[in-house]
Amino acid sequence: MNILSGINLPKSADASALYIQCNESASINYQEDEKKVVLSQGGIASSNSYFNSFYEKFYTQYTTLSSIYYSLRLEGDFKVSVYREVNGENKREIISEQKFENCQFSEPVKILPVNLLQNENAGRIYFEITCSSEQGAFKEGWIATDENKTREVSLAITICTYKKETFIKNTLAAIFQDKLLETKNFKLFVVDNGKTLDQADFNKQKLKLVPNINAGGSGGFTRGLVESLEENVYSHFLLMDDDIELESGCIYRLISLYEYAKTDFAVAGALLDLQNKHMLYEAGALYNAYSKNRGFGPGSLTPVNKNLDLRDANCLNRLLKEEDIDYGGFWFFSFSKELVDEIKLPLPFFIKIDDVEFGLRIKELGKKIVAFPSLAVWHLPASAKNVNWENYYYTRNDLAAYAIHYSLRYMDAVKHLTKVIIQALATFDCDRALVAIQAFEDYMKGPDFLKNTDPETFHSSIIKLSKSYSNQKEVDKLAGVKLLTRWFKVAAQSRSEWSSVSTQWKRASKEITSTIFWQQYLGLKN
Image 1 (spheres, rainbow, N blue to C red):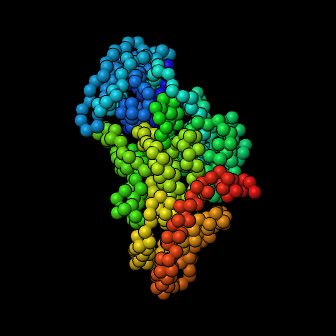
Image 2: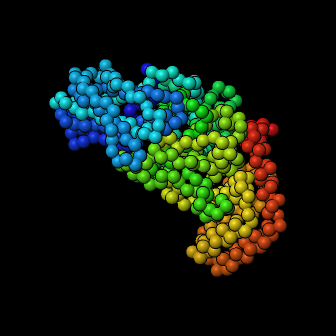
Image 3: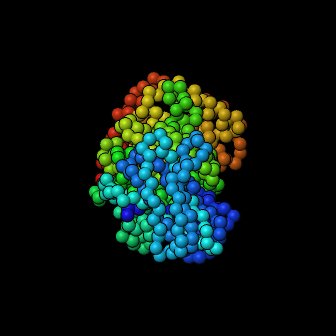
């Protein structure tokens, strides 16, 4: 038996609908050390949920699998039904139905195999158990196959962190307490940009703490990649943010997915709203898909399947319609060593757009980025944050990404930023206008500016800059006029240099994504 995925129970009630659906005669017992679903006669529990559905359409498209089965640990008498639903049909078809008596946890029951459909009728599969004894219980289960793997997979996981000790502790606990995950070949690299973590807490064989300079998310993730590439044993890599809540089963499922993969593809994990846990905020995203000529402009990042209520089966079926996404966030993003060998490492963007630009390189190779349903983390959505200094990195890096991958027109950039600056000044937000102007000026300095700037020192200066006016004791009544004058002067001076600077960014992109550059940039080699 090769296990593809565990049927996991929720850690807390606020996310229960994403794991198990119960009727009024069934409930999850959270009190005992080992959670279980307790059912009375007529009680129904179903894996018709986001995490525990088997997304047949994706598996048949991207893996060699042709047959699966369920193995369930039950106690009592049960009828077990297996169903399939297809996007847009609003109905379910029954695949099989079996009755079991006197079930014991010690002897898991094996459900009849399901032959996977290799056509447009492939959908989403789940089971439903109905208790026919006075009392019954479901403890755990597995989705398995008897088919051989197509390859062995070893996964290097990088978490980049900056003073998020509690989140890191919880994430490590979730991973190392997962008994199913113990059977897989992986190693976790925690890159500590804040240098606040204690080496004594990182003494597990599959865990390595990597103190690092604060080179932002892109620097931390890249440091993890450099460390894992040097070990030269990993077939795949996974990048994860530090401020997430993790369902560890997603890592197991990711590894088994690659073990049966037909071809090489990257995986973009979804972002679930940490403040509203049943809501899907983003399952992959598009980069300026709706802008004329994909020119620099507003609304460049467009989340796919935003704000789906994952308690609704119709929303789960919507996920069966695959979108051709441009990138996935580095909160949970995975790819192969072969891909890294071709496209190299992220750009030294500190934060913002580094994951977008990395995804664009993958797409330009002709590789797929797949938003595989049920692979996700909980994370605060971007809309929950409003930090002015982040706007600097977003603007500067967005300009650079456009210059590298598209033909960025001078007037598109100037018109958009003029609008941003005027809107900021209209609300007396001089700090926002200032960081937009500074971002444009620094972009115009070309890639040498990035190469020759110490990221830690520079980041401190950007934070200070972003509070220039909020820190003033007296309001500068002429500040808006001064900023507009500065902007129009900078914009006018940039016209003649525009084409040359854009070319510099294109030419430098290969150098500043190389291992040699990053080793020097991070101070690993002189």
